[in-house]
Image 1 (cartoon, rainbow, N blue to C red):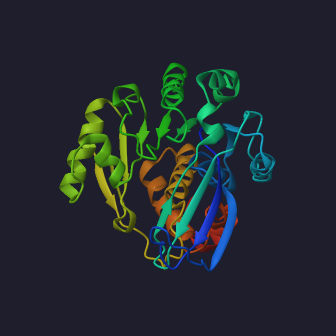
Image 2: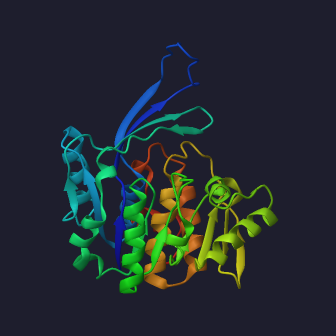
Length: 306
């Protein structure tokens, strides 16, 4: 069960706040945590913790955060051969979480901006062994396009999480993806269409299908998940939980979906498992610290096939 995650890593700087300060105001925050994050890294960590063999293709800086990031990958069983160093800052993400578990995030891409198509070619032999390529948009778009083309050339399915939302993403250059997984905001940005109702979501998803993408999976937060391949469609209800911190829930969903799909090839089962896993993650604080391993998850949801 080998997965290649070609994407970002970040250091999460998480402040738990009572409210956002006004301009020019200084307020006290009751808690702070520092952790490993980044959409690519988060998704890789989830898949690895659930039992997938994962190779990470990414770049770190030459600062004090780099060693910690590499060590974190290794401790989670991820192949770090293609975690490359570059001059300058590693990626960082200041995150603010309020008392209602809503979060606001700033990302500084740092070394992630230097990940290139040449880095994909350097890792080509290892990526060719994989059964899925997972991508996000915290790296240069040209690198994303190169990874999509690599997957098409070598017959490797590709999952694209178009986040953070990028208005200049060219859909024609990602049309060979097997899966695209936006949230509502990203779906609206990609298609220029409203996403208020279920019919709106169907219509917007149809735009992505018409481009050529095989499966559209839209994460809808507390409303659940919508999936369509053009012939079939289904809405999956969200798990009812008491949320403490929603940071990284989308990455939890994608990492779990990727793991289960590579193992089973069953999209519906993968979506059901991913919904439960993402729901479980928001009951704990932090990003990667909120991700259960296979044993922990099975203890809570023994019916899930991991």
